[in-house]
Each structure stands twice: as C-alpha cells, then as structure tokens.
Image (cartoon, rainbow, N blue to C red):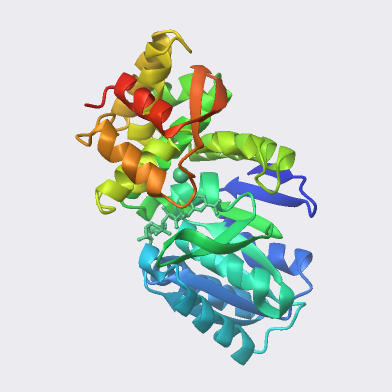
Length: 352
Ligand SMILES: NC(=O)c1ccc[n+]([C@@H]2O[C@H](COP(=O)([O-])OP(=O)(O)OC[C@H]3O[C@@H](n4cnc5c(N)ncnc54)[C@H](O)[C@@H]3O)[C@@H](O)[C@H]2O)c1
Ligand SMILES: [Zn+2]
C-alpha cells in the first residue's frame, strides 16, 4: 500500500493499493465517528463494487444506505444533487455521519458537493474507481455540479476525510477511460519531469498502477498544499486544458476530456517551441509519449474556431486568457495573454 498525506487545513490520507475496498469497513470504523453512511455511486460501478461494499459496511455495524445515479456527466446537475440531499435527510444522516463516493469523477464531484453542503457540511470519503478520479478529482477538495451554462459552476472547496483508491477496481475500466486517465498522468509527467516522465515510457501505466498513481497524487498534493483554494499555483495543473477544453466544446463533447487534454498539451508544447520558450525536444518527447498511449495530438479545428470557443467560455474574459506552457519537461509556467496572442499560439502550435 502507498500512502500520501495531504496537509490542507484539514489534513487527510490518500491510500493507494490492491484490496483496499475489503479493508474499508475496518479503516472507516477507526477513522469516522459515523453511525450512518451513504454510499453514492453510479449504475456502472455500483453493481461491480457497491453492493459488496454496502454489505461489508453493514456487517461492520454501520447503518448503510446507497444512492445510485445514472452514469455520465449529464448526472452532475442540481436535480440529482437535490435528490441526493433528500435521500441523506430521509436516511437520517446527522453531522457525525459520512458520505462515501464510490466511482469516477462525476460521482466524486457530486457526492462531495452534497457532503460539503448537507447540514452545512458533513465528512466524506473518496473511493475513486476511474483512473482520472484516482490521479486527479479525488484529491484536492474541489466539489461541484454543472449548470446548463457551464461545467462546475456551483461547488465548494471541501477536502475529503480520506481517499481510498483500490487499484483492483481499475481492472474493469473501459479502454477509453483508461486512456483519458493516462492523458492526465502524462500531464503530471510534464509538471514533475523525471523520474515519472521516463517511467511512463518504460512500461504501460496499467502494469504499475500503485506506483504511478502514488507519484501523480504526490504531485497534486504539492500543488494543493501550496494553493488549497486555487488562487494561483494550482493553475499549472491546467496544462493542456484551455486549448483542450476548446476542442471538447467544438466537438460537442464527442472528443472526451482526456483526448482534449492530450491535443491541448501537444498544441501548446509545439507553440512553446516555435515561440522560443523551450527547445524542440520538449514537444517531441511529449508527442511520442502521447502517441504511445494511443492519444491524439492534432485537431482539424482552426485557430479562429478554437480562439472563439475558448474566449466565449465562462472562465476566460476577452482581455485575459491563460496559457500554461512547458519550458522543459518538468517545468511549466503560466502566461496571461490577450485573445490575439492566444490565437498566435494556436497558429504556432500547428492549427490552420
Ligand atoms: N474535482 C476535481 O478536482 C476534478 C478534476 C478533474 C475532473 N473532475 C471531474 O471529473 C469528471 C470526470 O471524471 P471521470 O473521467 O472519472 O468520469 P466518470 O465519473 O463519468 O467515469 C467515467 C466512466 O467510467 C465508468 N467507471 C468508473 N469506474 C469504473 C470501473 N472501475 N469499472 C468500470 N467502469 C467504471 C463510469 O461509470 C463512467 O461511465 C468530470 O465531471 C470532471 O469535471 C473533477
Ligand atoms: Zn483534466
């Protein structure tokens, strides 16, 4: 088992290893004052792991209820959130009780936000079952749901009491979701540099989950501890995300997030080299690694289309857009730029 402690206002442990779901009842018993638990999951994950977890928690003496949402981003909304709050109330959870988020980032974000706000905040435990949730969304305390006008528009910062990542659950993850997670892992490789970056090219991530998830969580921990409320440094975790999000938007979300991030990182790395911010080995090494994991590095969308899509997005004002770029593998920087400069970067990154 690998353990990483995140020292935020309320410190917590991230445990990564095989068989952690089986150990969960004893671990939760020792950690939480809770009498009642609500296991929140989705309809893919709950039949695989949730039913057994509820049974084991009940046998360990917790009064355990469950809430199962439809899988997918479309469930991350105020209606499902409101429905879950109603179920927490019906099940009689009090401020000493806890929510267990068992699933990918959608479940984690929604269950975390419900826990953050139910009775002004109760504790919750993240049990990530997707690779993306394991390396990204389960750590850092950002919880949210989407509004029709945009993703993650309502939320709260609320750190979990514990993160339990049972790598055995990743065996059932669909290949596409695996690749999406790998794009984020490569992003961590760009931020940290060695030894992570080279390690990723030596063996597939799926053959060394515990080691790689542990390394990524340690990178995220450093950024979260330095900037718990996302006011500055944590922005670097958005490498590849601005352009990537534009590609996702323009595709009507048929390009999944991980692929968007892969394309976004490749564009920005090519541009950073073309504009003299890094040497040619940086985009070369990045693109080689992305290709190795079956991730795309090009898009048909034009610089005009992408600039318009990104500039209209809620996070960016017309006057200031943020570019996170690599100056080396293992060193990234943030630039605040105008819409025009962003457009130049996209052109330099190979877009028409
Ligand atoms: N809070 C944060 O800091 C943060 C960071 C990054 C992303 N996010 C959010 O995370 C969400 C994306 O997360 P995601 O990629 O995990 O999506 P997801 O939760 O939709 O999971 C992806 C798919 O994999 C399935 N799945 C999950 N685990 C499985 C398993 N072990 N076996 C079989 N199927 C499994 C799910 O049912 C779903 O169909 C987005 O809403 C995004 O905004 C949040
Ligand atoms: Zn991401």
